[in-house]
Image 1 (cartoon, rainbow, N blue to C red):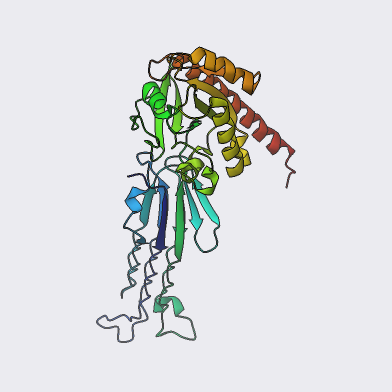
Image 2 (cartoon, rainbow, N blue to C red; image 1 turned 45 degrees about the vertical axis):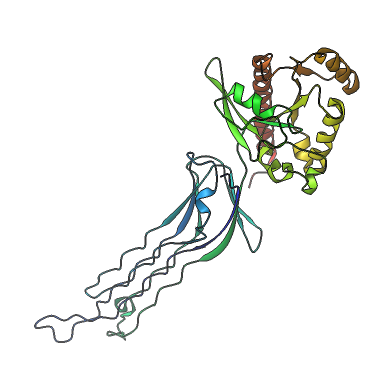
Length: 347
């Protein structure tokens, strides 16, 4: 099951109480205070785990608590520190404070970690309160409570290329032919019910991570169909492959292209502004060449690649073109980053 949203409650462990104690030794009738400090409470961390690709592990487990610190003891013995609690999530998980809607952290790289709830500080034992004027204090700190929070987790898959298009345009078939991913493929709409990631291996030890999302239909940005629920999974991509059924049973590919573009723009201007490869699929069908010519006439002079996801025609050229655009976008992002940093005023 693919789960990309979850709400959880987290609480750091309470700090252990300090101890009130006095030395009890033979021939020492009035021993001084020797109450030890308590232990610090454990903290709650969220860590990105590269072996996970869904928030399924959080289903049914909504409360996460770290261990409390142990109380101090006599003979200046400090209580044990509470164990930390680590919650593992897929890379690409955004962590929000549920009450304020504040983004706390975006865990992009595997191994990244963030503390979402700190444990309480230890309480001091009575030895810490001893002074020249108060040599036998009978007080100790109780220890501070751990932080508690309600969090909302949202997963955005990390891919370089995103596949968009109408239902049954052939996105799942394409992904299954260029990668080891095995999305469901069938001759009816919405066979893809959740996003699927695939890794495309190219020559020269190059690779692309491609994301396939459920097909979009008119009104997707308002919740019609399945598309709007998963569009966020291609917000991180650098390039979009817009797949068109060259001979759709209803309408024509130019209408479908404009419809999907409209939905992308209404959902997010940033998403609609991403670099795009327009691809005419199912070129193995009769009259596909004629339909492709009509499509080029209606859309203008833009580049349109032709493929057949079933037979494999044109897939190598498409993946090479996608890799080329991804590399160009990476370079552009790097130049923009360097330029921005150079123009920042020195503090």
